[in-house]
Image (cartoon, rainbow, N blue to C red; front, side, top):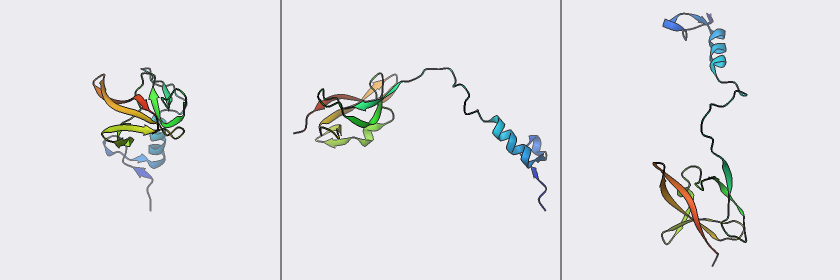
Length: 115
């Protein structure tokens, strides 16, 4: 028969299984708990860099103009140029990698209209 003990306590002592579960739940941060203080990054949807288009692309960029994550891997490449095609105007939003704050970051640096 099941004894109801869990050895998750100190030094392998028998702790009732229900108490072990409650302890794990209580030690987790609450859903409404305030975030830890620190630097907050503002994120905006990436928009087409064409002045006449302003279409939305499926990426996010910081206020500093860097894309979130390593998005260079998702960029299309033609003749050595990497870009994100705009779904609205079909133009190319050119991307490259730059060093910023000791990290390699990805940014959109230009636009080429559809040919």
